[in-house]
Amino acid sequence: MTITAMFPLLKGTEFKFKSGVDAAFETTNKGETYLFKDNQYALINYSSDSKLIEVRRITQGFPSLKNYIFESGIDAACFAQD
Image 1: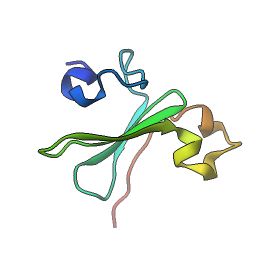
Image 2: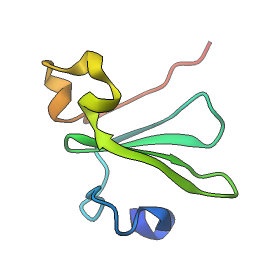
Image 3: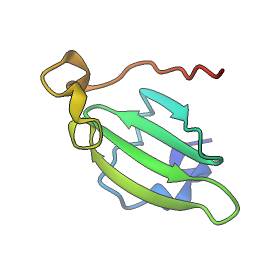
């Protein structure tokens, strides 16, 4: 299944999912996930009322990563819980 088939809310966005996703992680907010591709991310809520929250450059959403290697892309992500 393609990413846009799984998440139709991403169709027509500037986010480039046709070639896949570089990394993803679920937030502590139930149903929210960050999807990373190249130097951008999409924050989505995939709960029963799926919605696209935002699509931005990594450095816009994570300003602390500016001037680091991660501003051009994130290739892996994990989430650690207590």
